[in-house]
Image (cartoon, rainbow, N blue to C red; front, side):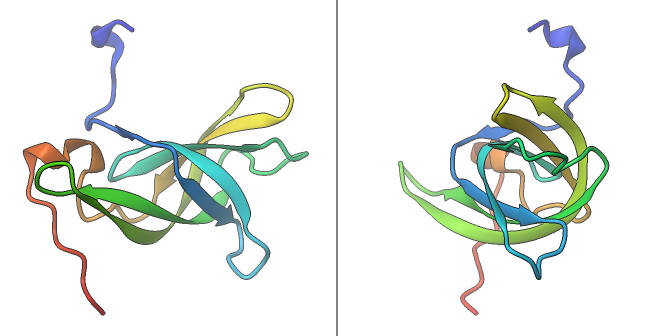
Length: 124
């Protein structure tokens, strides 16, 4: 890809980990597979249900993000974020790739962890 066409302001962290989402967190959650994440947005794949999710739809997602530590160590930090779907791509007849923009950003930039101090997870 031509770097001149890149519009992202932040590097994304590519990783494959489950994500659960729904438009109403009181209903049964739908599972997807994370593709990549930044502090403000995430992309994941999920089964292509008839019309869910749709572009512009509000969703709430529960997911974990790896926190990189010294050496090759890492830990997972859990998050729940609401946001809206800003792009839906049909991968094939059974999969969609969904991009969600968070209403509240993560407290760190997952794709830039080696360049910043990552806040330690609270032990509550």
